[in-house]
Length: 257
Image (cartoon, rainbow, N blue to C red):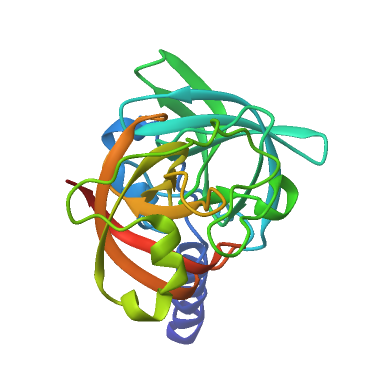
């Protein structure tokens, strides 16, 4: 009798243990991207709700075309098309071109994701931190800081008066090794702006010197298109940022003077 009771107790323990060893399904909570900034810094552990099991998107690179963009104070919701199918992405706020080609990796799928600012619930949205232009599809930047041929730019200036201490762009390019790694000051017209790519603004500056040489300058300052501006930054040579952003020369970390 005692032996039979022992087997009954052992069976009950095994059943209880087996039941508790099953994975627990945790539903994703609805939350607004505006109040969950860290989700774009760590897509594997967003606050405001645990991820659904199996919800993490594959790590392969996705090619998409932007069909619609909705900006909030800090984030941008994007309706994109991938292989004929539509989906919504949420990325750090940035200016995107409708109809433009973009790439993204990873991301976290959220169900019933609420945006309080737009007063709507997205049935499915992917929270994406790695989002960038498809430079191969849209025209890669040429080496030396040229303007991508597939994009529009303002007319080059005939001549721009240099500020005191500023170097003409043609002179800078003619003596690259002399100025490599040094702080340089240039004055020119901002003929194109690519805002917030890789966390910085990319300006194309021309001053009419030489054959209207185009100089790419990176900065965190907001320089309006068409402005005549004096900037001071560090000249770097043979820079490869990846994703097709390669430059024979570029001025980095520029500040307005």
